[in-house]
Amino acid sequence: DAGITQSPRYKITETGRQVTLMCHQTWSHSYMFWYRQDLGHGLRLIYYSAAADITDKGEVPDGYVVSRSKTENFPLTLESATRSQTSVYFCASSEDKGGDEQFFGPGTRLTVL
Amino acid sequence: AQKVTQAQTEISVVEKEDVTLDCVYETRDTTYYLFWYKQPPSGELVFLIRRNSFDEQNEISGRYSWNFQKSTSSFNFTITASQVVDSAVYFCALSEGKTSYDKVIFGPGTSLSVIP
Image (cartoon, rainbow over all chains, first blue to last red; front, side, top):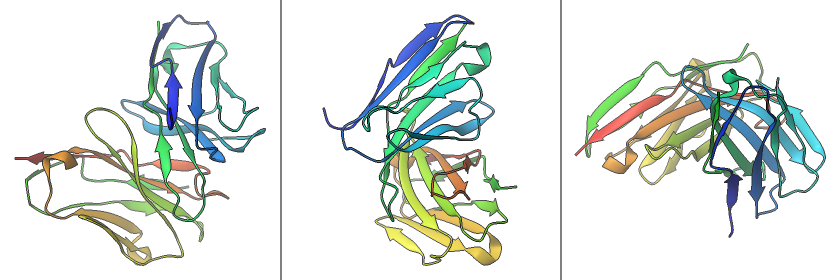
């Protein structure tokens, strides 16, 4: 299917466990992003990637690891999940050229117990 | 430091009314980018517009229009003849990084309810 997908859509895990959220896009967009959305903190950029093998930190990168070995995939790993990482996570992609739109995945709701 | 203020927490309008959502930003950079996003009750995020700091032309897209004024550090969003489907939370965002999405920060959002 064309577009941008995230998996899983819902995840419950326990404190200290490693969790990987997957993001896949079919457009071969150069840029990919991870955001988290929390009540009280709004939307915040975690990491972004300008191309395969190029990643950079956003506003709240601590506790997260990303990789981008292939253009179409941008997984986000919580190495040791904490309760404060309970959130809704959105992945997005874009070409980041003038006027190009940014497309979002449906989100992953992560609960850390 | 960069900052985005959306002073209107919640707005309610009757269908077909025009409504303007305010966004005021702070930045020390001369090169920056401004965005608007929509989040309907279903929860998905929808990109609406991106504007760079060198382009102060107003933008119109159907019933949506954006007014960028550097003199007042504002990037306001107007919906003309509002419809129920416009009910959503709208976020304004600012990026002052090397690329348009680098170091982006979001405002707290304005929740718009359009009443039939």
